[in-house]
Image (spheres, rainbow, N blue to C red):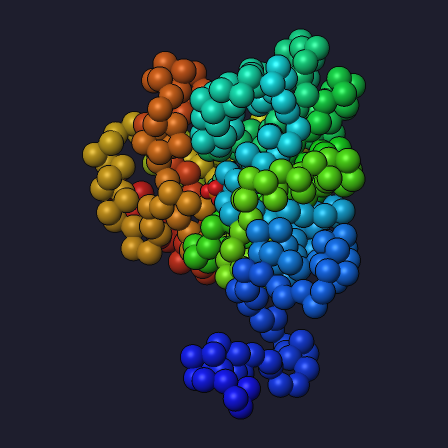
Length: 393
Ligand SMILES: *Cc1c(COP(=O)(O)O)cnc(C)c1O
């Protein structure tokens, strides 16, 4: 470097790290957009071995996170995407082409329905909906060109369950692929690949991230044929997660079991406490004996039923607002799965665009509130809700 001028030398000085940095107890964040290749042989070898050449194609932080998710989901491989919606787009685009049909559960994350209804038809891909709790209805709705069956495990906000083993049998009988968005459940509640799903997706923004500070998504699979096409589309659509979010998410995954198990336990205890509150008309959580699919919940979720619940109060908007103001630490948020308990109001968020008549038929009324239960002390949580619910007196 001696004979270089500063403007050149400064570009290269300090370029190499001293010592064996890969033994650091926490992984580094690899922000590099590209990796230098010694010669053309190395380039070819690296590309063939799926190595690091260019960030959009592969990044060490993303790969490490992908390995942790594959481990949790008991899958071959995981693609880590820029958001849950990016993962859902990637999955659907990978498994369909012009002229194909998707059969989806009628209760899904709102933006997934918007994607299926408003974007995919532009590419000649049609979606119709069926009640996935009823296998006969699914069988009747399958068409000769049905390539994908798509569902979530627990519906939002009424916590209706889909029997994945049953739906997988129907899907495979029709030579269709079963895709499962398991965001609400997490691998600590169910591992959909073990129940016949071909692809499992997560919005990592929720429980995996867990601290409301990152946006990412994932797809995990076992079939190498699907994997090859996923990889192709992943690279060409440029939907990769950034290295910082991937690093943050990997760090969060290390404590995910501790967080989620506590959240599940809190959700069960809070459900039971709400059931006893005189202002609460109904509580929806699969751990309750009052849940219409309690037996299925016991079979599918031997380790607990997740940390999402909903409950009904009087259909009185003013009182509901008063209730929200009265809460001391629980916040009204349009996300879920974080360490802190949060609430949402389906009528004015997830189901805002659904016509009133259809919405009421679904059981989603003004007084329905959804809770994403956090890791607070359960005594504080129960008294937080009970004291705020006094506004309904
Ligand atoms: C949040 C969410 C998504 C979308 O994830 P983003 O990370 O916001 O893109 C998809 N499905 C479900 C069930 C979700 O809760």
